Image (cartoon, rainbow, N blue to C red):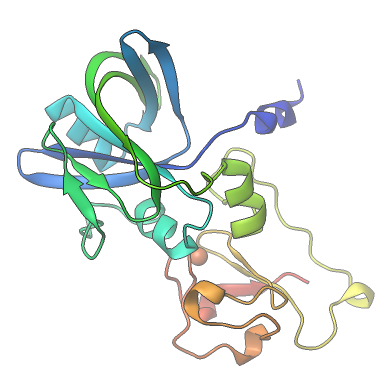
Length: 233
Ligand code: FE
């Protein structure tokens, strides 16, 4: 079996939010899809370990914000590499309260959907929640982000935690990049710093060598320090 085939399935990138009483949480998901149009229903697959999972179980409602392709890595990182058990992920983020009482993230969103859970399926590590859409709107006419674009263009790598992760090849000494142009990879999340790209979201211009990044520069995805990076070529 060639599991590479699974990587050819196309996805988007979404923020799923829910509530438990008056507490809010949100997380990144790539598995939102429409099931039926009459009535409109959508499904989302959520890891049972995630706080958002507990919240959807409790409140039976969730919201999905469809992210645009200009969404900064750090914005995705705050919802994807941190747990709502340790930090309030919605602090400093623009959101509104929907008719379900759950938060709807509007920063970087092209559209959003609000759903009431009508069915769920236990699939081992995850639960698939099926929700009837009870409200929805388009926020902007920007292009939505595909998961493939996020992985290959925005991140430059597949996350370490992903099932499809492949250990990066260490460069042969003779093939090493010229001084200052070496790529470095975050040990925590797998993000690759490419000096040719820089990190424009954090004000780092293209052409900035890793060695010249300010000491207080942090991984744009998970917030790790420079010392958590390994040279990969
Ligand atoms: Fe990182």
